Amino acid sequence: MLTTATVRDHGHIDEATATRIAELWNATYPTMRAVATARISAYRTQVAEKAWEVDPNHPHADDLRAFLPTEAKTRRRLKNAETLRRELGQLDRGTHRACTFSPGGFSVFSAYAAVRRLLAATSLNDHGLAAVYGLAAALADASDELMAARTQPAA
Figure 1 (cartoon, rainbow, N blue to C red):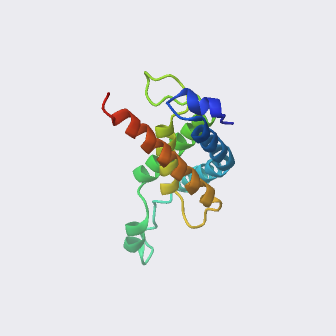
Figure 2: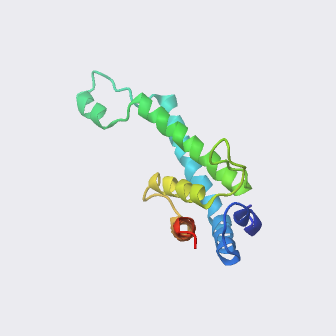
Figure 3: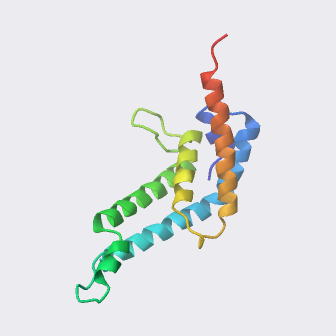
C-alpha cells in the first residue's frame, strides 16, 4: 500500500499532490494488477496452445496466419506484461528502482510510464479503468510540475 510519505520521499512533491496520488494509486492498484494478470494469463495460454500454429490443410490457412501473432511476438508481449506487473508491484511497495544507480522508492515519472503502458495494453472488455485514467491524469499533472521545476533557470 502506497503512502503519502513514500510518494514524497522520491521527488519534490507537495503534501496535497502526494496525498492525492497515494489515494488514487491505492484505489486503482487492484484493478491495474488484475488487468496485468489477465494479460499474462492470456499470453501464457497462447504460448501453451501454440496459438501461432495453423493447420496447413485448413482452407483459410494463409488468411489465418496473416492475423495471428508470431511466436516471438507472443513471447515478447508475455515478458512485457510480466515486467509491467512487477514494476507496478514495486511502485506499490515503494521499492522500484528506475535504474541500477537509483535508490528504491516511488517515482512519479516511473509510475506515470507504467500506468500509460498498462492503459495501452487494455481493451474495451476491461472494467474499472475510469479510476486508472484519473490516476494517469494526476500523475501527468505531477510529472509536468516536476519537469517545470527542474527546467526553470536558477535565479
